[in-house]
Length: 306
Image (cartoon, rainbow, N blue to C red; front, side, top):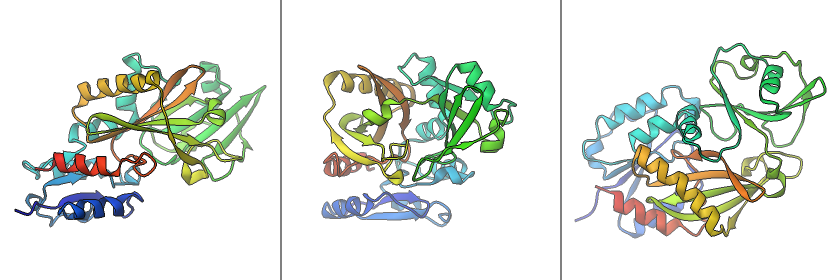
């Protein structure tokens, strides 16, 4: 008997890997269907064998994203949602899961948190933390949306927005964080200069198992290890110590939130150790091509189908 199709929720833009996933599923006799999250009220969810949210890129620009996912989950019955609603609820906002990992004592990049509306200036952050170079980003964001790098040096303050090239501009030290980011809660992290020399490492998990690692580098005249900003992605042969480090964090996440069809843990090397930057647990780029893991991901989707 032919299996029911897999539904992929999206918001108008898919990962570049989606066509290959669609073709690979079709080769196994499984159809896939893109479902626009903004217009899915008439969908018969019982006609699907699985609903996957990983293609919902740009979710941070939709304030009703979580509400819509919760509404869909209430109509799925026995149809699995990946990753699960509990994972989506916990990880759509960095201040939830990441603070949880911080309190659990994970090896994180030094991080502090600011609530929306809190009256605090950039200078006060620098004085409070002792950091002369730090990154400010909303707790609900992706692809470096509304992300800034701040330099504080001998009474002057400079700021650079996430852009395709690095441009610092002078800014008043008393500028409040609210003036930069609006009404969002904020995650503030010490800038790690190792991003220039060693890059950022991404550890990918598929079906609760470690799959592969990727090294992301920074483009010349930039500070973000992201292909959108000119960086590059390369397969990385992680050593046993690094893999064990990533598995330790993943094990905690799994015990805390349940099983994962997919997950990504991002780190920046700090001398001989790794420091957790953040985890991508909802709509991550999985680097399936670079990690030679397309078939592994498709097989995992098959195993999760109802």
